[in-house]
Image (cartoon, rainbow, N blue to C red; front, top):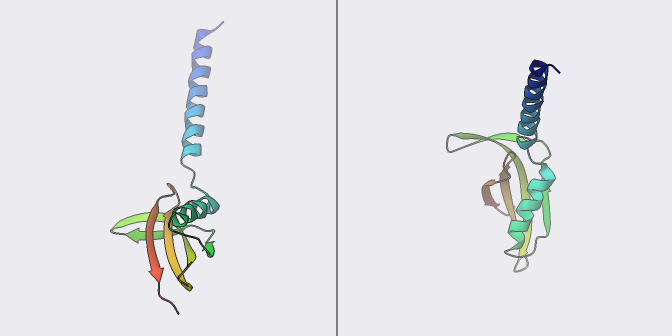
Amino acid sequence: MDWKKVLISAGLGALAGYVIAEQVNNRPISPESALRSVKETFRKEGPISGSWIYMKPEELNKNGLNYTVYHGGITRTIDGQNHQYEFFVDADTGSVIEVAEREAS
């Protein structure tokens, strides 16, 4: 048995495992997951009557920081009136970056 080959093989295996783990952990969340998370948060305050999300991530600069985000919206009916909210969710972490109520048109 050649210990040099064994050590090199073990080192390469460990390196490959590390690289694969890093790539799996750094994948962005899916837009469906982002929307589901935002809807769960909104449902805590009351029912939702509609929702949408763009499937393609976009760039957002907020307070001098750049984010890759999903852009979406939620509609709620409060006292018989529709209220629409627009949101941006970080595509890497799933954290909500911004929520704003849209003016009725």
